[in-house]
Length: 152
Image 1 (cartoon, rainbow, N blue to C red):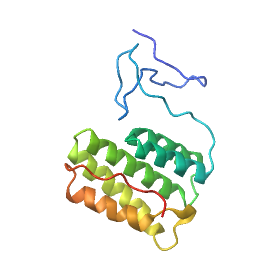
Image 2 (tube, rainbow, N blue to C red):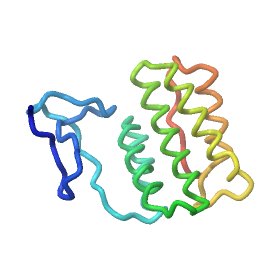
Image 3 (cartoon, rainbow, N blue to C red):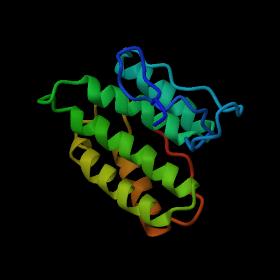
């Protein structure tokens, strides 16, 4: 049995290169840069995630947002917000990969998770705009969705 790729902490981690939508490529292929794991402020995470979205790399945006989500304590109220933002990026990834069902499902989950934050959105996040964007993706998941803007 082949040994699995492991990170410095010994956790399984696929070291294969990936394309811009996060699909694994063959070992030795030229892939795109990976997301560097590190602590980021909310503003830094949102800025980097938006840069990835603007470059049509929603999988990478998802990794940034997921890292922010998972770095928060279980009881942190904003945890659901960051999880929802990560799900929106995954939904866009599914849409770009040609999976309309996955796009509709995951984008819907993300929209439901962030919607409660619309009345008082933290960090300048455009929650209302993102919910509207998610509804448009749910209505036409096979169409090219515009890149969402995380901040107002």
